[in-house]
Every structure is written in structure tokens, then in C-alpha cells.
Image (cartoon, rainbow, N blue to C red; front, side):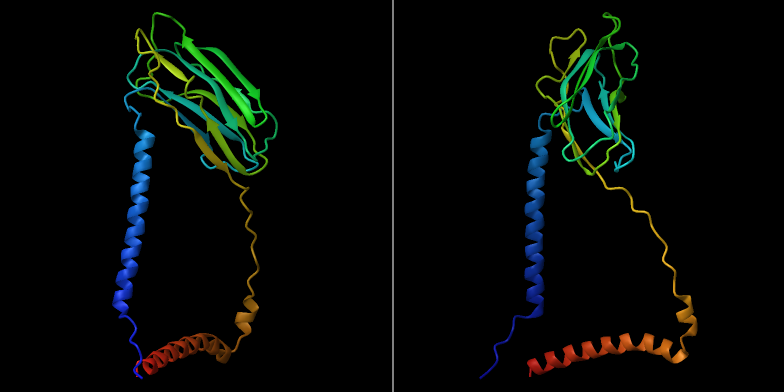
Amino acid sequence: MARKKSPPLQYLFLVTFLLIGLVIAVISFRSARFDLRQHASVDASKPSLSVTTSPATPRVGEPLTINFHLNTKSYDISGIQLPNLQVLLGNVQLNGVPTKSEPVITNLSLLHSLLTQTTSGYRLDHIRILSTPTTPYNSSNQTVTIASLTFTPTSAGTIQIIFDGAATKVTEFGGTAGNILNPPVNQSFTVAAPTATATSTPFPTSVAKDASPVKQLLIILIPGFVIVFIVMTIFITRKRTHV
């Protein structure tokens, strides 16, 4: 009875590549749709808030600073209202209470700033207004830090920064549009475990020196013979299968 021929190898490769391409296309399409939904209401010309950490890769046992930034782009503003900003710690534990700081910004005075501990982390309320009511503030498309929180994490985990989108506002100077702030984007970052300290392991140089030339040759040749034997076995098996 004739043995049924298996599909040619090139057909299997073709089907595999087509499936991989289809998977990549579906993932790209879904990512593009998500990106469009996320940025649909963002106007790059309007003021924005951002969050950064220092260092960029937080680690357990190392001081960490979370910075909150404002960029008014080309707008003149009369103030910023940043209430009910949630810092959710998750499984991250801290060595004490975070230290809050508010840098001095010319003509944008601090009206109110309060850090309150919650059951899930901390809440920050931050409000700034004009120092001189008749003189607007404009960061001239520069990013300025309006507040910072510094602490030392003692355990690994993920920290989330959650804005109150409805209450967070930037008001335009002399304008009637009300809130001109781009919708703030929530952030999350991971506090990694401490970096492991590398320990050196003594190298057994005496063994290499004492090894005879025959042993060194066998160490080199044996793996080669094993590889050749495996390749030859596969080749002979495939040849018998096609006979």
C-alpha cells in the first residue's frame, strides 16, 4: 500500500507565515483603534499636565520623587486647580510619610496645597492663582514643576496616579472658555526589587592547567561527534521514510 505523501515543506512554511502575518495585522489594528480613542479629545496646542519620576526606574530602598508638571503651551492662564489627585500605592510600602514640595513659580502663587493619607495611599490637593491679578502666567511652551512628592519605597509593586478629570482645570486669562486643560492622563509605574549585588565565583584555573592534552582534545571533540551523530540519524531516518 502506497504511503500517503506529506505536504511539501514549502507549503507548511507559507501557511505559517500567513498565520503570523494575520495575527500581527489584527494586533496592529486593535492597537491603532485604542490609540485613536485615547487621543481623540487631545489638542496639542492646549495646556497639559504630565507626571515623571526621579529616578526613571524606581527601586526598593532608593529615594523616589514623583513630579507633577504643567505646560501652558502658548496660552495665558489665570490659575490651575488640581484637586483630589490620588496616589494609589497598591502593595508598595513606604519608609515614612512622603515629603511634599511646591517650587516657587513667578506670578503663579500657591493658594492651597494639602497631602492627606487615605486607605489606599495619599490624596493631593493643589491650587495656584496669579500673584498679580492683572498679569497672566505663561510658561512659553516650557514644562514647569508645580509639585513633588518624595519618599522611599520599602517593597516592590505598582503605583498609580489618578487625576480627577472633572475637577482638574486650567483657566484662560481673560477668556470665557472656562477649562482649557487637555484631559489629564492617569499614570502608573513599577517599583522594582533592589538590584542584586553580583558576587564573584573563583575560577578553577588549576583544573585547566593540570588537564592533559588528551583530555582537552576529548573535551573539544566529544560535543562535535554528538552533533554529527544526531544530524546523521535525522538524515537517515528521513531518507528511509521517503523510500
